Structures are given as structure tokens and as C-alpha cells.
Picture (cartoon, rainbow, N blue to C red):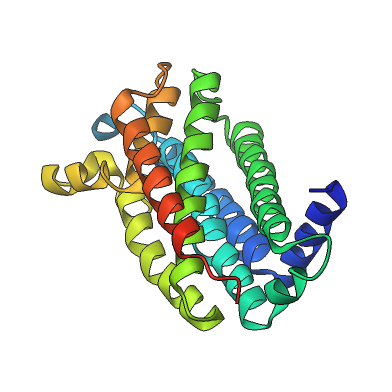
Length: 244
């Protein structure tokens, strides 16, 4: 797979606007708004001494990955299949598998840039420290990305068309973001909801991020949950994927 093909897919993604606008621009604006509210930057005992804003920084990083993986990626790939792009690619030296790989890499590249951007803005503008265990945070981010992209590929495999792929991704997206703590921090959820959250991809991702922020490498439970999603969803996606 050539770098040129990845660049082409990134340009198409930018033109499509779903990933850059909703996956990067919207959470960045939300981060700036939340950071500008003084009450959000006061340490809370219920949050383990952290400010509510410090909890929202990793949530918005999850927001970005989830938007790219669950909505932008299936929307694009299902559209390629619906319009016969993948079928036509089978007759060229490029091949459809390289197009799929380029799509995955272009979305990962956008997610990496967004994560750096969010951490930089939170640090420079609002004084939020980087995760104490940076290696653990990177490891958690990679496992979260693998789990969510595999779910996105599964959506692409089972959806009959672009509209259905977008609908499925959207239906999954909002409950996942709830369990990531977008509306109510996980630490403030009732015990039952907290336990459920830790079994969801974004809830487990948030748990792993919090471990890294607290200075330790992410514990085994969230990593195993995320790896389980990545393994199961990618296996089903590979077996059910249709090129046309």
C-alpha cells in the first residue's frame, strides 16, 4: 500500500467533512467551551480530586475516535461498495483490500492528530497535565482504536448500504458515549451503570485512560475487554465482508 493512496483517502475524508467536522472540530470546540467554565476547573471530591474538565479531556479523545470509527468509516466504505468503487478496484492493480487498509490508516492518522491537538489545547490553554503514565496512555489509545475500528468494519460488513451504515453507527454511538461519561462522569454513575460502563468499549477505554492519568499502566480488565471487542468484531467482519 502506497503513501499516495493513504493521502488520497485522507483528502476524500476531509472533503466528506464528517470526520474532520464532527470528529475533530466539534469536540475541540466543546473542549474549549468546557475549559472556559471556571466551575469545571475546580477539583471535586467525587472525581477523586480531579476537576470535571480533567475528566472530560480523555472523554473528548474517545469522542473523536468513536466518531471516526463508528460513523465516518462505515459511511465511506459502505458508500464505496454501494457505488461500485470496490468492485471496480478489483480489476485494477490497487485492489480493494488496499483501499480498505488506506481508509483505516487515514482515519487513524486523523485520530492521532486530533489527540495531540486536544492534549495540547487542554495543556496550554487550561493547564491540564499530560497523563502521568504516557506509555500507558498510548497503549490504551491504540487498543481503544483497534476495538472501535473493528466495530466500524463490522458495521460496514453487515450494512446493506451507506444510509444503513450511518444509521447503525449513530444508534451505537450515543449509548457508547453515555457509558464513556460524556453526559455524566463514570465516577458519578450508580454502581450498576458503572459496572455496565466498564464492559462497553468506551467505558473500558475511559477506565484505561484514567489508569494512565493516575500514573499506572492500564489494568488488565479494560485492556482485555477492548481486545475482546477487537478480536470478535474483526473476525466476524472479515468473514461477512462483501466487496459488492
